[in-house]
Image (cartoon, rainbow, N blue to C red; front, side):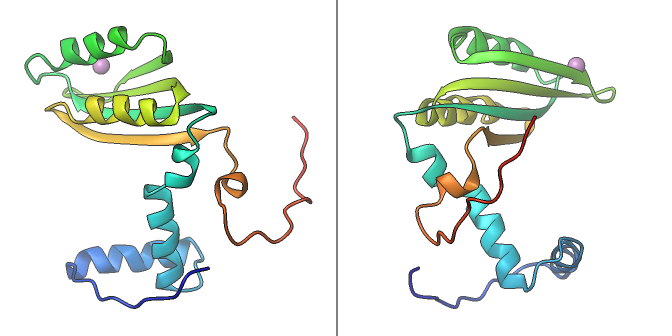
Length: 154
Ligand code: NI
């Protein structure tokens, strides 16, 4: 494990209050531990950078379907990358918003690229890319301490 470094962060009081609630409800030992996990989740470079293997991931988008040209662009992009798009689920959230869950399969960096293009479109409010099928233990190259006891059946 590398050296611990302290740094300070400025944020709005209500955001901090929400974060503290998150820390409490998530039963994190400390704020630091919660931040570490959030950062790792956001920067899942280990999982993504192991580029030789094929990953399955979900991209969850929330977007405003009234935004001019957005629906067409989303479709166009998905068709252009049809070999990576395994399935989509579409839910009409409310009058303005659609939720779309896109299951992607392919090389990690390619999936990240496609996800960035999709969530970068104007009118997309949220775009969360989550790796499925890579265990966090396998993804972490450090801090191994015997993970042999978590076998399970389906
Ligand atoms: Ni819709």
